[in-house]
Amino acid sequence: MTMLAAALTSAWVLFCLVFFAIGVPMAALGPFADRRSRLLNVGPTLACSWLTIAISVPLAASVHGFNWVTALVIAGICPVGLWLARHRGTCSIAFRHTVRSLIFRALTLRAVRLPQFTVREWIVPLAGLSALLAWPFVTGRSDVRLPVPADFDTLWRTRQILSGAATVLDPLASLAAVVTRIAAANPLHVAGAIRLALVVLTGLAAGMLVAEVCGRLWTIPAVAGAIPVGVFVPWAPAATWAFTFAMLVGVTSLYIWIRDCRPRDGWYALAAFVLAASLLLPFIGNLDMLVRVSSTAQYLEHSAAAEQALQLDRSPADSDWLLVAPPEQQLEVGKGRFYDLARFVSRFRGRTGDPNFRFDLGVERIYVFIEERPVDPGFAAVGVRFVAAQPAAYQVPRERFRLGQLAREICDDYARSHARTAIRYDDGELRVYQIDR
Image 1 (cartoon, rainbow, N blue to C red):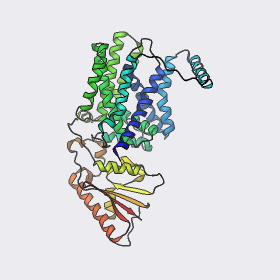
Image 2: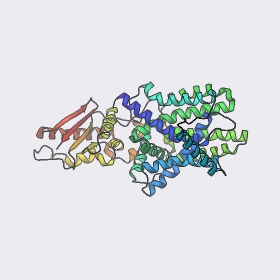
Image 3: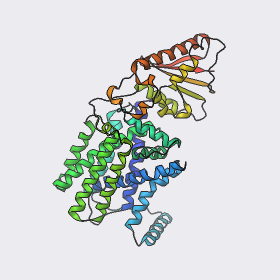
Image 4: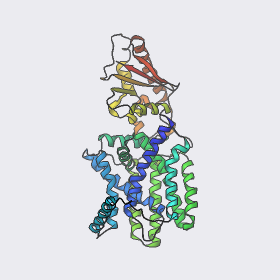
């Protein structure tokens, strides 16, 4: 996948996340009488919409009703609820006024006039949003891999929700599943984009807390200083960033509620703290995962493996192919297109030298990923449930390398006795065989 394509995909996913989880709920809230900063409402708005998603997605998945339609409905629950709360007691009047105003402007070809806010109110939110969407282009980061092994647990549970295989109580995976449906993107892209957004939003939330405690004049310096700190700190799981963000939003809202005695901020604090507690549920009995940080990224796969898997995932839906690879690639192409490499070796070892042999996998084309140099994440992968669920051959680097060499022998023997077999990709770390029937 090219750098430009990866950056465009990440920007699109970030736009969908910001628009549906922050922008639409903030629009439903409308302008405040106290004209407080737009930026101060980003955290509480996301906390409310995220908590709604965390509750609704498992309920929809439990009845096998989670799809792109219900994802849009779930994303709309929070904005509708906030709008009803805003117009409590006058909902029908406000609804009729809004509909009539839109119809009148459409019939008279008048543009919809946006609310008039000062530059001071909008400059920081717009600058922050622009920086978030532009970050993939500015950094030029084309590596689509997840840099922390614990993030694979989130990606794993996201795939379970999308496939309807299980009802998973994981707010981070639920958010990723909704964004995946709405953006029609690969879950790997969504997980990476949400991770980036959480890092920046956590820095933003920290800056807003400092600004509220020290005074409004500190808003821009605090935010400008917090975002770079959030970007360049050591690597930590996305769930850690999510929990920290929710706690910062809760503390800020609680402080404002105590200071100004506004009920709205009390509800914001409650929603943020409930969200923070729910984010800990997938890590019960394994909370030490949340405090594991590293100065460098700890990958579970080669960069080329993720890129090649995403290229295959973008192929036409009617293409008849199957990917044989380690378990990480199953999360990138989906269960229906995947065949486990260990099972492949166990089933076909010693048989492919026969000219009459054919792979009976029910597809016209097979891609086989061979790691020529296994990736060793070290201690960072200990306790990761996705890794622990894999066969033992994948968890020991030496055995994983041996498994790859056996798979390579199978493919080489088949290539010597059969035509229509080629090496699709080879960079010294990953080799991809393409086998046609």
